Structures are given as C-alpha cells and as structure tokens.
Length: 343
Image 1 (cartoon, rainbow, N blue to C red):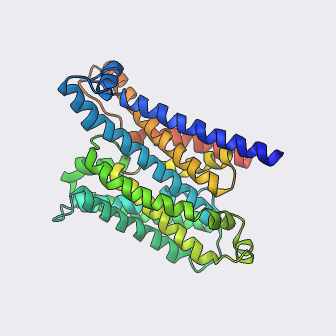
Image 2: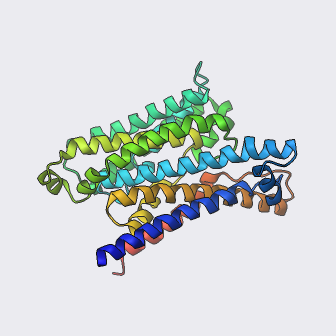
Image 3: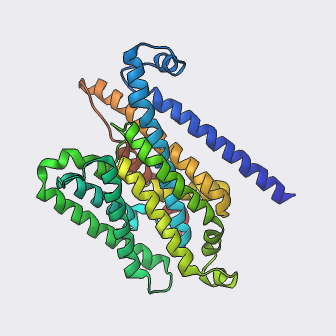
C-alpha cells in the first residue's frame, strides 16, 4: 500500500512539474517590454498586427523554447553526473564540463576563426571543449577508485584551469569581449529559431540516452561493488554516463552560455521530489531544469524592466545567468548547511 501511495504521489508531482513548466513558459512570453500580455495572446491566437507577430513569433517564442530545452538539458546532465560519480557536488559547472564548453565557444567566436562563428560551428566547438574538460578530469581520477571528495577537488582544479585558458583567449582578443560575454555569464537574449532547430534534436537524442541509462545509473548510486554484483560493468556504465552528460551540457552551453548552478542544484530537487530511482528522477530533473531556466529568464526580463525604470535608462538587460548564479549560490548555501547539520 505504501509503494502504491508513493507511486501516485510521484506521478502527481510529475504532473505538477509539467504545469509549472507551462506556467513559467507563459510568464516568459509576456515578460518583455514592447508588448503586453493581451498582445501576446492575440498573436498566439492568430491575430495581432505584423509588428507584434514579429516580436512574439520571431523573438520571444524561440527564446522561451531555447530556455526550456537548455534548462532540461542542464537538469539531466547534472543528475546523470551526480549519479555516475556518486557525488552531490558533481555538477557540470564544477567538473570541467561547462568551463570546457565555454572555452570552446569563446575560442571559436573570440579568436575569429574562419568558419567558426555560425551557430552550428559553435555547437561543435562547445562539444569539443566540453569533452576535453571531462577527459582531463577522467585522466586525473579515472585510474583511482571512485572517491566523491577527490573527484570534487580535481573537478574544481580542472574548472579553474579551463577558466584561466578562457581568460587568456579574451586577453588575446580583447575587442571580442562584448560578443563572448554571453558565453561567460549565460543569456537567452537574441536566441532565434536557428538556435532552436540546432538545439532540440541534439537534446532529444541525448535525453533518450539518459533515460536508457536510468537503470545502470540507479545501480551506480549504490556503489561499484553493488553494481558489479548485479552484473553491471561500473567503468563502462560510468563512461557512457559521462559522455551523455557532456553532450547535454555542451548543447545547452552552445545555445545559452554558462548558466551557473542549474546543473548542480536541480538534481537535489529532483531526488527530493521523485526519489532515488532514476526512471522517475530523470524526467523530473528535465522538467525542473526547464522550469528553473525559463523562470529565471522571465525574472531577468522583469528585473531588467524594473531597473531600467528606476535608473531612468533607455534599455537595461540583466543576463539570465546572473540571476541563476545569485539565486543558486544562496540555495547551495542552504543545502550545504542542512547537509552538515548542527554541531
């Protein structure tokens, strides 16, 4: 009876999470300055003047969809990483994956490499950088027994090295700082249908791979010995999981840049709400990641409007990544304090 009740509760939680995604998506669509909510709904209903249709259908809608898919990808990537490495601090941001992807995107756009400025080329460059960061971490920890503390320390070191290389690229090409700042902070501004067309097939393929890996990841969370006793090859399963996590992160970074703390904190929420079984936690993490990034995008737009009005500025844009980093850092402090508990 308890198992049935738990199953129903988690199914209801998934449904509520899907409703939350729909709600924040609507909030993101109406958060801009030029048009009000009534204008947006008229355009979505097939009416509205050409200018309003252009703003909603060519600017706001692809921006919202890219935010949804990028958030889902980061939520999945973080959950896969934390499960594969058995480390609650193993987010893409601190394992070299996100810094590597950012380095690849910045190198492609900032150095002015021929043929590397198109969105497709940026995706490729971000993937190369993400796999390089993950590969460096694997070289440092792959020959050792899986140790969450050591993995976290090595991940921070790898991330610091890659961030330093990114700074060196910017020193070589200081004139390109304005064009690459979105990769450093993370932003959904200016996302168009081309970004959506490139992002969603990539994310869909690797999301399916993550779901296929749900059962092996659940075993890995129990430890290598238990996984091996169940007939799983821990090394191979972990390598497949890392490839999946890197691919998901690289796709998201190539579209929206480095959105801080999303891949680190969303898994904690997913495990708390949906349990340790990855067959439920992974879909939940995708929904929660989509809600977090899209909600942060809407919040950033509302905050930009408020600050522009207060400062009497014509236009002011708060990056989505700045909001996720500030809120994520505060939430991480709360999680850390609860994990440590009172002395």
